[in-house]
Length: 503
Image 1 (cartoon, rainbow, N blue to C red):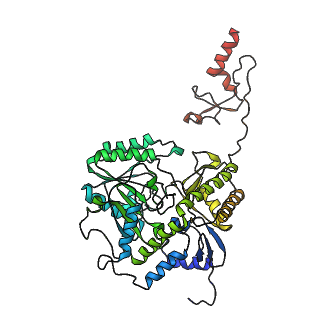
Image 2 (tube, rainbow, N blue to C red; image 1 turned 90 degrees about the horizontal axis):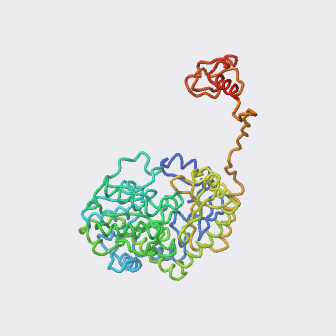
Image 3 (cartoon, rainbow, N blue to C red; image 1 turned 90 degrees about the vertical axis):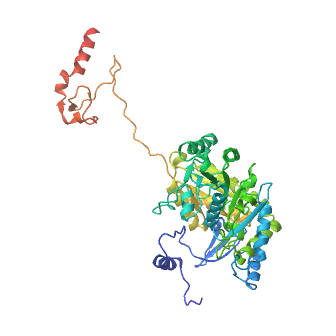
């Protein structure tokens, strides 16, 4: 598009506010002009290090040349037929590859769609078709998408669910284990049992659904022991286990699927985001007999598993093999965690550094007090980092978590540069400190009895049971007062006089 003058971020923001629906959020008032690997440049020519990765969509980096070449080649062949009308080989080949990658010693089948929410929706449809049951149990803090069913599964209200209810029924939320907040694995499993006792019988539950690492919920890792306990409950009652790998999949955690690190295999896996390096495609892979439960025509979609998305996804898999990105994911995670811990050693507000592979986060609290999540400081740090050329995102139920989803192709030098910007941002922004309270005056004591001498106010509470100055009285009796001269006849004064006579 030819322009006589180059646009600015401010000018584009003004146009956006006029043309785009308010409900579409935007973390930074920046408009990208181009991007490569783990860097991007805005329309004003300024460079940024990208620690957000399009929310875990470009694990292979922005515009990886092999992915772009594969898509360009596919463009010259055909762009769309609808797989349900005229099929194409890349769809079948991609299904074969995902079936081989998914954990579990059983036959598997796959289908492809367009978005992560669509993958979750279809995972639910498949689970209900197989079990002939309606109920679903998700977890607090979980995020599963923006459609009505996936919002119902999501365990975080703001901003996703505000004003959109009611949501589909037969969806229940158990407690997700969280050591930082004192929620043990046993307590989380007991919350599942409580739902099965108090809300819905196990024989009507189709599936448990959880993220191996909660994404929008705060990057809390599901403990392997918790997953094992959940699978025992599932197997006991014939309930399926669905792993939502939309954000954790495609190598982000050091394995292609994060659930490969579990000792048990899920029955169904939903995946999307980075599986095609920035091109829209999602998938569902699972036990063959489970995946075959819906009747022909029950699954699919007009753009589902598009030729361009399949070509990009196959190229991404090749890039992972050629560049050994699963190993790189672990190395990136180790480097990030080490750098973040150095920052945490200087700033008490950072109470936790955590992650799995290259899915890493820090959590901030006022003065390090776990009872006071600090969303304001989180936003100040993110804004300061953007001003210095680093793109970050927040997450968590309290908005106090900074998450890092940097492309796995980022060099060590770029990672270190980004970490230094983050450290400088923490140094630059004002942080919370405990308010300094005025020193409490020491009470005047009687020399003999060591009892507190009553202060000499001119106005006293007239209620005998109170015996306090009206300035300290919080009862309704404070409306009636008496003078200090009258205090000599008070019950309290009479008791003190008798005590002196006895001495």
